[in-house]
Length: 76
Image 1 (cartoon, rainbow, N blue to C red):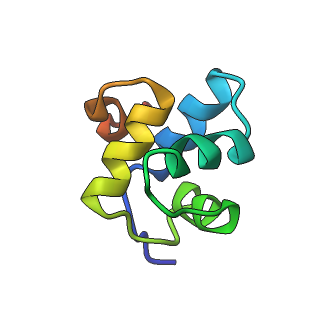
Image 2 (cartoon, rainbow, N blue to C red):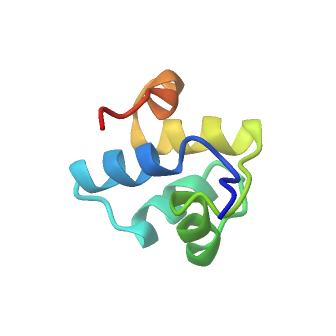
Image 3 (cartoon, one colour):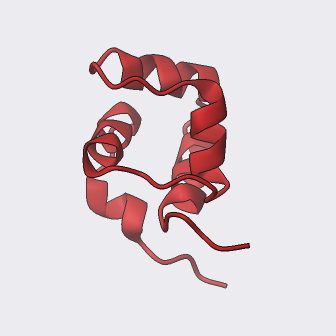
């Protein structure tokens, strides 16, 4: 399977570490005027959907982390 983004795994990890559900994260993103629903977020987290720059920014804002954190490489 071809990866469509490089931030999905970090979005999921950060979200879970903050005890935030997908529903809660979607609501926080929507409050910023970005239309993302739960299936879209699921596809982002599973790297099956590309992420636009303004979506990455809204996700970082919703998670209250610097956007750079979404792009950090995971230790394998």
